[in-house]
Length: 106
Image (cartoon, helix red, strand yellow):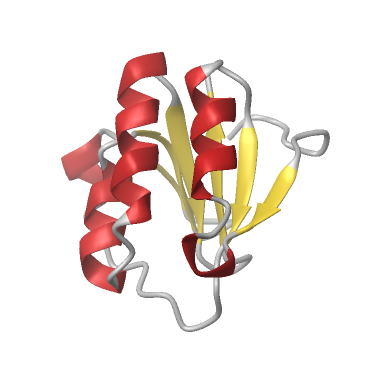
């Protein structure tokens, strides 16, 4: 996982901020999405070429397509649009279930 202390954080707010996140990702700018409590994070990291960080309980450096799986699991179609932006910019994704965050970076 890369250091993300200086990444801007955007609250998901039921997908209302998806366009803002898409813009940042398409311009290859990192961003942290603060996701709602109770989100289903059950994904197979090997399916998306993730590296597991068991000490932090995170999946790191995943393909952006992971967001499609989370979109399906949680009824969040706006995440599919962010996945498209990740594919466009070749961005990678870290998933932090304990912190309720999705970290998008290069």
